[in-house]
Image (cartoon, rainbow, N blue to C red):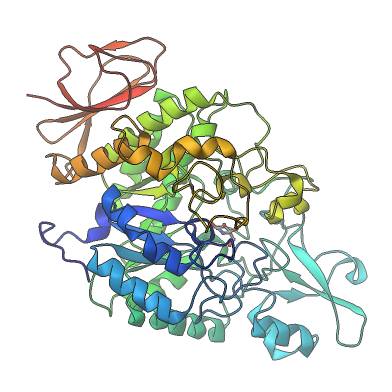
Length: 551
Ligand code: NOJ
């Protein structure tokens, strides 16, 4: 277990910077074009050099890969394409020795349709006890119509009809994601007990934390009433109120149960939820003292590049979390969202749902400038932060992947109108001047093609360049550990500089200033800059940020 020296008794996760490893796109050690556990082991030095505290690794379990591994067919093993349990044990030992904590991803709202439980449920026919672990229901209109109007996050309805063992069209089963991801019924005690055991399996192995996938989906309103979705509605869960399949109050019982298990372990194990819900107050319920420890903050991720919106999200987040005593987390990108270099380069710079926004043009120079400023803002805020692999390189979304390589279920389920999330999942460029850029051995074709234009963005190309985005992140993470106000996680107080400027102080001598206006902002009187995302000089150019020491 990494030491906690210097942190006092503050649990590590209250201020941790966690780096998201989208495993199949991080580093490929065995030449099959897919990133793997040993590829990650081989690149831990990059993460240590960068200065993050922990990694969150996306699902590595055996999976038919209908949704990039979020369709799990065995929760106690590793997909042979990405490694073995022995590789994982070695990774845990090496990461801990290097001072990095390891958070894994648990997908408990749904299994894969190839999970033995689901196969048994289908084979058992109507009324079989195995069906009670999922949501099997008779259809309406004599069976021909789905049981209710619920929709899938990937587009279309959330129900699929099975063919019964006698060959006739039969019951429908619920899947809030792809049809290959049937939802579990968490009222079933065998489901609850199975996941108790799965949690212990991984906590016993030594993982430091668990990311809870699709947390708000895990409870459904009894009776499964209609949600009242308009025809063609998108899965916009941040706008839903009293929805029967999302953020239902009973979901919190599950997390209390999990917390009781987590608390029996030493080492400040972490639960972090993925929860896109309606506003910070609903979000704060997931992190009450007897539930999960932290949660991703999608309001921040979805905020447009606009001082008023960003300040309002920060204020709202901190105000909602204070009463429950949980730290905030801040996140700009993930494997589910358009990379923020591209998003911030669009006229409408807030994030849209699941890649349903991919057509608007982006000014990537502007986007990168803002992304660099946003990194300084994010890493200066109280609490923890999540970085998505490649953002430290300033990678943009890949928007011109050929249609025939697209794999995200969103593509097909939207009737090929939304390209989905593959553009943020393109394998990382490590070195060299042509694909696969050190991701795989030369000559291997990665599972998604990398653009030739990434040659200037590789880790090797940026490592020694003090003006690179990689250097900016490294400098920021180093200063975050040493500057008073940041290192001691002091509270934030706003500093009024002017319209379209976000500025705040932490502790007696730290200040962060982000210029979101169209004019340069004179720095005179604001403090001594110690890190800047843009040009040097006496003024802060538009769309840049600075960390300053005052007094
Ligand atoms: C959230 C994950 O981040 C996403 O990639 C996945 O498609 C859904 N949950 C379903 O598991």
